[in-house]
Each structure stands twice: as C-alpha cells, then as structure tokens.
Amino acid sequence: MTFDRDLVRGSLDLMVLSALAEGPQYGYLIQKRIREASGNLVRIQAGTLYPLLHRLESDGAITSRWDDTTGRDRKWYELTPTGRRMLQDQASQWQEYVNCIRRLLNPALAALRIGPEPT
Amino acid sequence: MTFDRDLVRGSLDLMVLSALAEGPQYGYLIQKRIREASGNLVRIQAGTLYPLLHRLESDGAITSRWDDTTGRDRKWYELTPTGRRMLQDQASQWQEYVNCIRRLLNPALAALRIGPEPT
DNA sequence: GACTATATATAGCACAACTATCTATCCGAC
DNA sequence: GTCGGATAGATAGTTGTGCTATATATAGTC
Image (cartoon, rainbow over all chains, first blue to last red; front, side, top):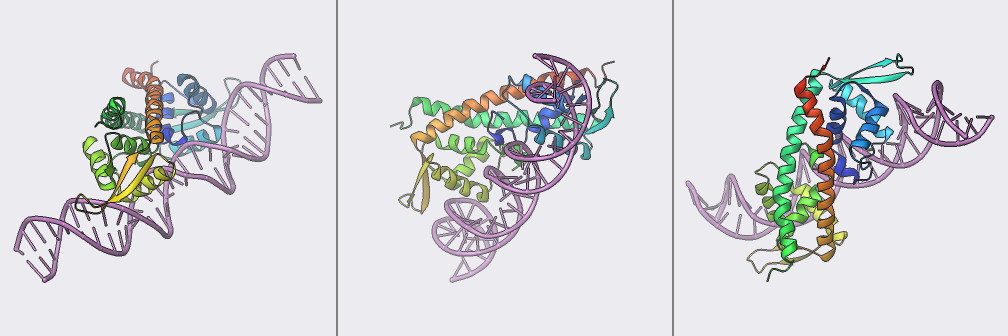
C-alpha cells in the first residue's frame, strides 16, 4: 500500500464492491483493477483481499463459485442485490464524509497560507 | 461517531490538525469544532480525542501547556512547524486518495444505474 | 529444470478508534 | 444549598481490520 494503511481502512470494501459493479470478477483480477485504476497507488495485498472477500460473502454482499471454463480454476465473485445496495449506501456515505473533511480542511489550509501567527 | 468507525480512521489526525490550524485550542473545543463543522455527523469521543492528542504531541506535531488565565484550567494545544508540515502533507495525500476512489467509484455507480446485468 | 506470474488461502500481529469508567469544576434551576 | 447538566481531562481494556509471513499449486517462459 502506497497510502497510509489507515487511510484506506473503511474504504476498502467500497473499492472492492466498486470493482465488482461492472460484472463478475475473481480475486486476482480485482486486485489488479484496483491497482491500475489508482495509478499503482493502492496495492491491496492478497492476504488482505481474500479474507475481505470471504467476509463480504458471509455478509451476503457477494456470491462466489469456482469455474474453470476460462482455462483455469478461478473463484468468481458477483454482487448480490444486497451488495449493490451496500455499494450505493457506502458510496453516498463516502461522498458525505468527503464533504465534511473538506469543510474542515479548506479553512485550515487557508489559515496556513495566510500565516501561522495571524497577528 | 455517526459514520462507520473505520471510515474516519486515518483522517482523524487530519481533522484534529485542521482544527488547530487557525490557532491554539483545547481538547473540548476541538471536539466541538469538528462536530459543528461536520454538521453533527462526526462526533469524536473524549476517549478517542485525548489519547490522540497525546500521540500527536509525542510525535512533535503539537505542543501543550496548562493555562487558567481564561478562568478555568485548560490544556491548550498548538501546532508546531512539524505539525503544520504534517497537516499539509496529509491534506495533499488525502486529496490524492479521494481522486483514486473517485476513479473507481464513478464508473461503478454508472454501471449500477445502467443495470446490473448489461446483457 | 528454474523462474516468474498467476491464483487462492490462513495464521498471527499491530494499532487506531471504540466503550466504559473515573475525576473534577462551573453554572443555572430549584 | 444542592441537583443536574455542561464543561474539561484522563486511562484501561476491547474490537476489528489491514498487515506480514507463509503455504500451496498451476501456467508460461527462458
């Protein structure tokens, strides 16, 4: 992970669900998609991704099935209706949260630019 | 905290440093400022804030001193030059990260709107 | 045959944010 | 005067998530 480990925390689910929104994917592909979409800045480790997928599955957000018709045995994951709802909910919550940070951060950065000691 | 606990993780430092950018503050005031700036959505618990302030202080990002000249004994915190740099660094990192999420999220939400099963 | 990329999995660790709890002061209402 | 609520700070212990390390196995390339 190029970003702080904890920056990513809480938005990893959102990223994985996003990666699955355009159709079924298997783990290794999700990993690559997120890495590439982020310009190599977010690198989810295999040891992070697979337990996360298992958790999402046990939460009912995704389903999985093994399939080797593409030439190799891979575990394909797919969003359930619950997962789609979860993605939308988490996305709007994310957006709202980003707005909160912005309302705090913008005046702070402005204050820094003016100078730390205003008087 | 109204948001998912882990959403906030990794950006709490950023929020606290932001709250201190416009001048010295004491803990309780920081708590209130963040709550109000977020429209009551981010409520940092006292048990979260005070250890966090101690950590930021031991990291050299802020300094503290007790002062009762305002009528009551309060522990005032202030950004150090290190803390100001930290705030700027974390702010730009945050912005970059938000962009990464956006690049993943926008096509995903578009796909959801078109329909889960394209064909 | 050796090495890399692909592909999945689990055990155990680290640590930030949480809950719960404690202490203490100030102020207005009663 | 005292009761409750807001103010003000602190710590102990828990939880959960992402991490590292490690394991397995196949496909393709040199």
